[in-house]
Image 1 (tube, one colour):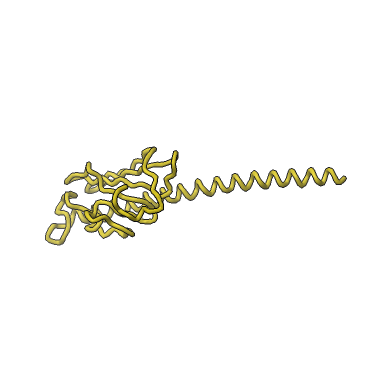
Image 2 (tube, rainbow, N blue to C red):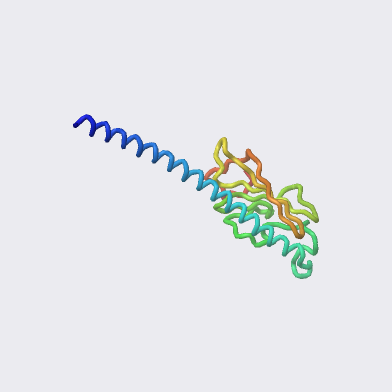
Length: 154
């Protein structure tokens, strides 16, 4: 009888160990997905602010139907750090850069989530026009370190 109980205890220990590992992996994946969703929400917020800035007349400190001079400072984006030129912003969710492909009629913002890890990094790109927002996700991207608040584009 003692051997059966010992085997049962060992079997239960193995099952609990496997369940714990599965739970940890699931939690890690959920946290990463939640961070990426938060980045997408930040991009939607930026899109809304930039579209409002786009249609605002220049005499009211808006874009006057142009994205040409938009920066994170003109959008009042709530970031922990904004670079000196206003083209890069960081917050706990990630880093956001106004892309070089931006023009008077289109604003491109490339976001790097803070949850990126080696081998599992993505970039999320927002293409914003006067009345549209499209998001695309690309595999591969920067891995943000603990010093994401430097705003220097590294």
